[in-house]
Image (cartoon, rainbow, N blue to C red; front, side):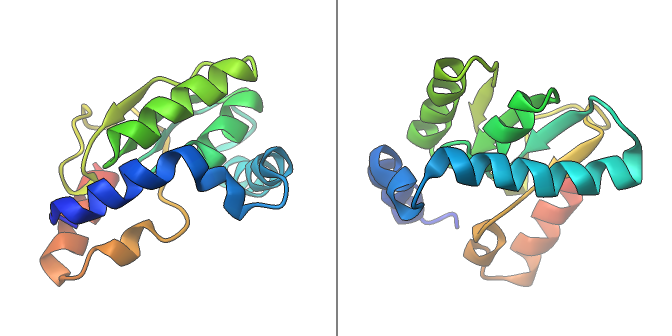
Length: 140
């Protein structure tokens, strides 16, 4: 994932990424319902402090924010992260984002109740040390 071509790929894809969904807003709501249920099962009703460490354009993060959680998003692609913030605002949600590599998350330890890393994000990490670095950051 350290290859700049991965970031460039997602930077270029960000304006059209929503097109992979038949209805992006419906998908956001569905994923928020599924993820929200998992969070409630383990942490109680909330709202909770959530980090989506691979937020892309916000598919999971926006839905969770709309459900009342305090969500922060980060993504390797600054273009995708910025779009997530804009899309959240357009739907009445607040979603601060940061451009960050999930192997080197820039957040203070234990500031979040739960971390989301969905879709194909971990698959971009091709070595055991990269996966270990990402999981260590997520765990902290």
